[in-house]
Length: 63
Image 1 (tube, rainbow, N blue to C red):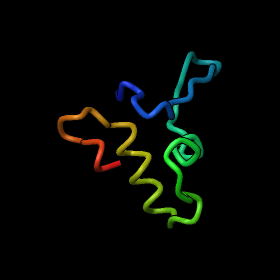
Image 2: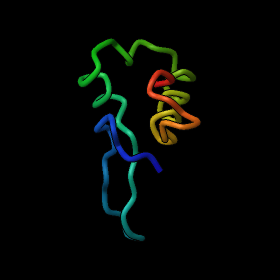
Image 3: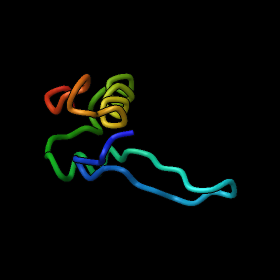
Image 4: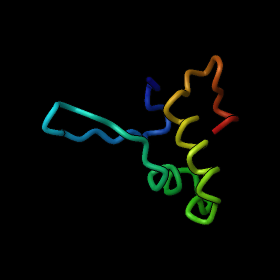
């Protein structure tokens, strides 16, 4: 899992324990731009890049 370099990981509790997701809204506020206007399929890929960011296989420039 990513080290949350971009500050976009959000944690929440479920009945089965803790879970997390990567907020594209938080990324949009931090980095600027208008992610909400990007096609849905690209937003899925962006969230995947945030989730798998490791600065080795997935680099900051990928995000």
